[in-house]
Structures are given as C-alpha cells and as structure tokens.
Amino acid sequence: MKQQECKLDKEITKQVKLDYLLYLPVGYEVTNREWPLILFLHGRGERGTDLSRLQQYGLPKLVEEQEDFPFIVVSPQCPLYTTWGLESDALLALLDDVSARYAVDRSRIYLTGISMGGFGTWNLATDAPARFAAIAPICSTGPTEKVHMLKDVPVWVFHGAKDTTVPVHHAEEMVEKLKACGGNPRLTIYPEADHAGLTPVFFNMEIYDWFLQHRRNTSHSE
Image 1 (cartoon, helix red, strand yellow):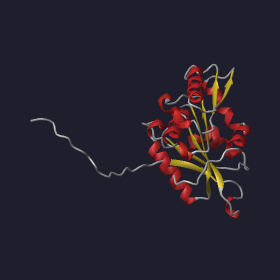
Image 2 (cartoon, one colour; image 1 turned 90 degrees about the horizontal axis):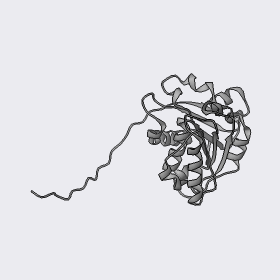
Image 3 (tube, one colour; image 1 turned 120 degrees about the horizontal axis):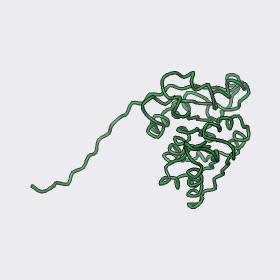
Image 4 (cartoon, helix red, strand yellow; image 1 turned 135 degrees about the vertical axis):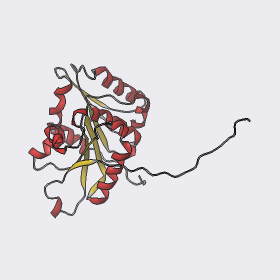
C-alpha cells in the first residue's frame, strides 16, 4: 500500500506555570499613569521553587535596596529541570497576564537577563521581537540562526573578557551577525570581568536610562 497524503488540523492548549517576584514603583497606587516594565531573567543557579534566591543579585536585589526605581519589575523563577530557552510560551503568557492586571506601558516593555537568563533574553526576543522596546543580554550567547529577527530592536550586550563559562567571542559573534543583517547593537566588554563578575552591571543606572530612550510602535496588535 502506497503512502497517503494526510493533514493534521487540530487546536491544542498548553498550561504554563511560573512563580515570580513583582515590584511596583513608589507612587504606583496613587498615580494615574502607565509604567515601563522590565522582565528580568535569572541564571541557572537560581532555578527552583524558592523565590528568595532571586533577591541575591540582579534586578530583584536592586529594587530591594533602591526605593525610587521607576519601572515595574517582573522576575520569574525558572523551574528546576528546564531552561529559559524552553519557556518562551510561559514568559509571554506572564507578560500578557501582568500587562492585563497592572498599569503597564506596553510601548515600553524591556528585557534583560544574565547567563542562562541572557540566553533566554536573546531567545525570547527573537521569538517575539515586536514585544520589546529594547533588550540587554548579559554574559551570554543566543540562537545565531534567529538573530536577524532583532535587526530593528535596540540591543545592548554586556560581557566579561575573562569569562571562561561563556567566552566573549560568543557575544562578539552575536553582535557581528546582528550588524550584518542591518541591526545596530551596542557591545560593552569589561576587560577584567569573568562570568560571575557581571552582576554589578544591574546597578549601573545608565542601562535603565538607555531603556527609557526606546519605545516601540504599538499601533498594531500584538
């Protein structure tokens, strides 16, 4: 019997679940305005079910110590036996849910992450480039075959020259491929920093000033 030509056409649903930390800016409750939002993706070591581990570094640590941070900050925790690269559906669903529940300026949604979270930043942004006004991946690499999706997205890459976990040439390759397809990324390399030495980057207010310089066009539906 010869092979038959067949087609599958069936709607399926997928349940997703993420625990997360939510920071609302000072004045959120008493002001009638929409706020910019940053989605922060942690590294591999913070996976699990203990959200307090996220507060040890990065944006969750910054907003614990600085009361006047002018963004909504969403910091999800990756489940233990997966990676951010496999959780794009859950992360986009989380953004949808938070944007519906809170006063989010959808033209100013930003994405950053470090190490595994940096890869997640590259990956999620290439999966949904229209969702983000700007991204900042830190000490990471990403899917080079999809980087052309970000040619119109502002990108600022950070890396340590002495990183042996993710050598700096991976970041340089991502930047060069993005430039080759018409993008205009920024690259900052810290000459003395290793893989663990980039966490202070999140306390550099210049990044957040740079985020706020960018706004995406929301005239089309997401």
